[in-house]
Length: 252
Image (cartoon, rainbow, N blue to C red):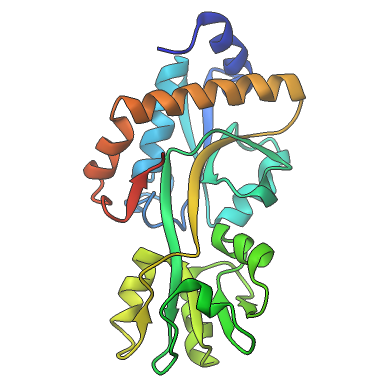
């Protein structure tokens, strides 16, 4: 292992200060949380990564579910969780210290029938309206990177809400995770799911920023944990276990 006793103790003081890792889980990510039968005990890649982290720290695990990533990020300073499994977007990095990513999810566009675009870059055109779920990682990316197209966000976070917005207002494009859009393409004959992506959502493990030195020590441990999880095959095995191979990929 790449960790040593000193670094583990320093990390544990931040990540499991009471002997339990309180791990925040984004319940709206259907690829990372694939079992919602018991909302208090969700199953999937993200919960299993949290369990592996707790094991690495010699700590117990408590899952703390959030309805969407915005709610999870907003609670970073509230003392509700010690680690959060969420997309590592720059807009969130001011309040959350992130590890290197352990998995990637493609975000792309579904375009309405008759819209002639074949690449994600073509969507960023004057007069094009893009529906997107508020506070999602890919929407944060679009806020910073769309130059000509108009970003039309849902009132509340939620991919289904973005689909309704796209349909009700007959917008030209719908932004989202490829797996979600694949299902929606079947509901709209003549629509086109673009082959390329506009970004890749980097799924990471974060911890709230507090004391700078303590946060740095914790993030260094998380980086080492993630590196071990990828090199050992743990992440790949979890993708296979939960049936999300081809929808998620192990981050490079």
